[in-house]
Amino acid sequence: MMNNQFKGSSRQFIEYLDRESQSGDDFEINSLKLLEELCDHCFSFISQQKVNFISQLEKLPEKMLLIVPENVKDQCKNLKQSFIFSANPKLDTIKLIKQFYLEPENSLYADRIHKTAIISPDARIHPSVKIGAFSILENCEIGEGTEIKENVHVYANVTIGKNVRINSSCEIGTSDFGPERDENNELILFPQIGGLIIEDNVEIFPFTAIGKGAIKNTLIKKGVKIDHCCQIGHNTEIGENTVITANSIIAGSAIIGRNNWIGAHSVIKNGICIGDNVVIGIGSVVTKNFSDNQTIAGNPADQLKTKIEERRFLNDLMKKNTSGHDS
Image (cartoon, rainbow, N blue to C red; front, side):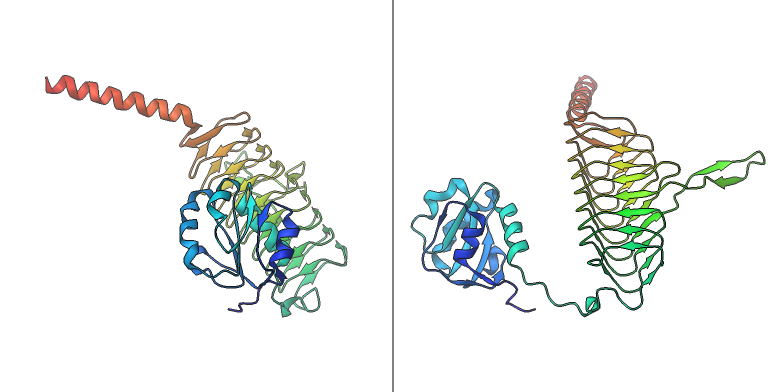
């Protein structure tokens, strides 16, 4: 792996973040390292959970920049490394990566649109859009700065906003599943005649499928991040800046609010409404509505506080029964 992944100096990094800092001589920075790999000309961050690591820095090279919590200034004042004092070291590290990381050249995008991509003549695609190998784009609309990776199928009646990233092997706006039984008890599928709208700054990871609406549009609002192997059903609305982690399923006509975190392997039943700022634990099965600012978990999912109280009650009951049996 190349070491020179970053281009900038310690002074440039410090000036870019504009945080309180402690630094000596200016030096070039060319790599981001884990704490156990620290070396000259690198940078890294120390989270609040790992501040004990600061005691080991006396034995390590001096030409490194560390983003550390604000409350460790006194521990750093006699050390020779350079420091940025941050309320959120991980977040500031992300900002530095986005600003100073040198993306490797990708020959697949030498011509912006790979020669194997199939694009409908009716598609409305901004000239800056990148489209990877073997992707198929039907009659859709794609905004400025968006990147469609390899083997992605974007179906008709899909609108994708600006600076969206859709990673390999995704199905975007596919017809969704909606079976009904007819008078002969045979299954027929509801025709999906709605569309799909994906707003700006959304990122979708590989092997995810998002269904278009049955009648109205499916809506993925700006800033949403969808992890690997997720399924989003027809007519669903996902609120701004919600995170959906791996292998989660959101069935049709669900409404998910803003700034939520949906844990891996979760299932949300069709028609469910979830408020804003809700955390859903790993493997939860959500079968009822929840309002804002809650942490829920379990199968069926309930408020975590309720689950803890139920467990405490059952434990106390078992202790009483055991005590009574022994006597």
